[in-house]
Length: 358
Image (cartoon, rainbow, N blue to C red; front, top):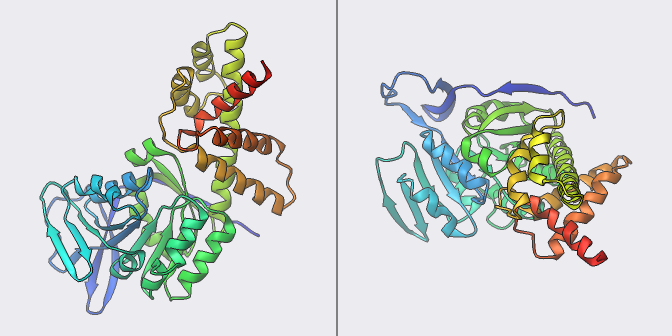
C-alpha cells in the first residue's frame, strides 16, 4: 500500500468554531493574537475526550488550559477529579439531573458525560485515548459507544495505540454514521503528555486532520500525516517495537557493567555522550540503577505493543527475532507482578533469570 507522509512542526494556533445559521465553520486563530474578546457570534468548538489515564488526563488538561471547551468521560469517574480541580466549568449529568459549577481560574470549559455516546453527541470533535484494542473498540463501537452519538459534521480522533485491523474497524463504524475518522497514536509518554510535547502519527480523513490540527498542536510538538487508516497504527507499533527492544538491551548493559565491577551510573553517562545517546537512557537510567521504576509508560502496555508489532511483522513475513526475544522478557516481567510498573522494570526480569541460574 502506498504511503504518503508529511511532517508539520508545532504551530501556535488554537481553534474556534464560528456559527453561521445552521452550520459550523471552523477557523484557526493564533495563540499570540490580541487578548481582545472574540466577536459575539464566535464560540469555542466543543471537544470531547474519552479516557483519562496516564496519557489522557494530561492531554485533556492541556486542552482545558488552552481555553478549549472540553467534555470528558472515563470508566472510573474519580479520574476526572484532577481536571475538576483545575477550576474549569464542571457539568455532571446524573440521569435527568445536572449539576453546574464554575470558576474563573481556568480558561476552558469542562463537562462530564455518563457515556461515550453522550460525549460524541454533544461535541464537534471527540478524542479517545484507551489502553488497548479491546477498550478502544468497546468505547467506540460498543453499547452506548461513541459511534452511536456520531453523525455528519462530527469527527472522531483515536489517539490510542492499537493494531491496524482495530483502527480500520473503528473507522468503518464511525464513517458509517457520516462522521469523519482520524487515527492519531502518539509517540511520547507521561512527561511529554504533561508538557504538550507529544508526536502525533495520524492517518485517515485529511479534512479532519486539518480540523484537528490546532488541538494536536496544543497537545504535541509535531504531527505527521501518513495517508490511509492503518498507517498511523503501523508507524506507532514500529516505533514502540524499537523502543521496547532498546530498553531490553539497555537493561542487559546495566547489569553486565555491574557484574564486571563497573559503575552502571558511569555507563549511563558514557552512553549519554556517545553516538548511541537517547533521551530514554538518560531519563530512565539513573532510576533503574536504584531499582526504581516510576510509571510513565506501563510495562504491560509495552508488552502489548510488542505483541501487536510482532503480529504486524508476521502479516508481511518480516523476521523480527530481536523484538521477539524482547517480548519474552517483558512477559517474564509481567509474570512477576511488574505490569503496572514503568516499562524500564523489565530489567527485573533479567535479575530473576540471573537468580534462577545461581
